[in-house]
Amino acid sequence: MEAPEAGTPVGSSLPAARVAAEATPPGKRGSRKRRGSHLMLKIVGGWSLVLALIILGAKHYWGGPEPTPSAVPAEAASADTDTDRTLLGNAAPKCVEAFSRFVAATTPEERNQFVRTPVSTASRMARFYSLNPLANIDPATLQLSHSAVMTLPDGKAIETLWKSKDGPSYDAVFREENGEWRLDWEHFARYGEYPWSQFLAGDGPAEAEFRLLARERLAKERRNESTISLVLYAPRFGRPDEEGFQSPELLVNRHSAEGRLLDAAFKLAREGGRVYGSTLPAIDPEEMIRVRVKVKRSEENGERRFEITAVPACHWYSVDDAGVTPAENR
Image 1 (cartoon, one colour):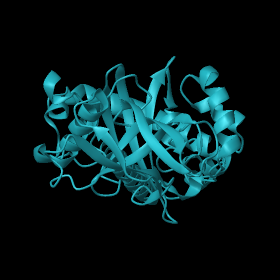
Image 2 (cartoon, rainbow, N blue to C red):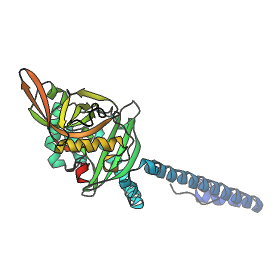
Image 3 (spheres, rainbow, N blue to C red):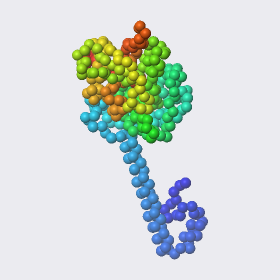
Image 4 (tube, helix red, strand yellow):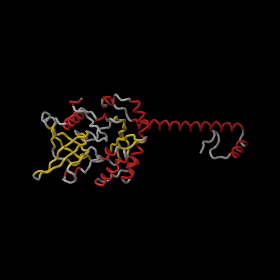
């Protein structure tokens, strides 16, 4: 309903207003007009203040606190912050909408509408959710606690951290595709070709690729050894600070391609760096890094053995890049 003119009672008809005006002495009519004008000015001023507070709140919500230089890797600190801030302001609402619709969907087919490369991802999603439970997340309980722009080898991404009122938290990355911001589903789901716990138990294929957490055993004591001693853990979805099923000890030749990548990734983590200059708060268990690894299972003399055959990446993003550079190639 349109706002009435100053001095006109809200909801009155024009004839009634005229009758009231004619029945009121001139001095009182002028006094009522001034009081109405003052009232309307107060209303307009109040709404202006409310709108200003909403705008300031939105800026604070999307922009978040500025990271201090000591907490930001050199690669991120040298970025065009004005451009990134503009990109974040435009993209963040679209990411929120896409994520809300994704978690509200009740079937893999529905969720597929909000992920990157949905056609090629559909078959992986179907198989993954046939082996793993579909996470039930209530979007009403989620709160966006962090959002930032991240530069990946093939373009910009928006990284987000969500916290739920009932405890769980989730990190999600969005990429622009055909004008829409879509979820990197493999990163979000911690996609693996087979459930890690069942693979360890001897089920499924003899070799598969997984997104896991890696911890280096006795890093200081073994720094001069020719092998790196690792233990691989399944991440716990929604509980990123906790680890799940763990592997036996795995030894990786320190001077192999895989060993050099892992060595570089652990060194970056010890120095406080983050892959691709991520500014998300640290949410993984201490002294652990994220890896995409191919693991082979075999049995010899009744004993089950595991071997890392490849390390495609030292992160979980869906990009064809290792994320770190071995020392010899820096």
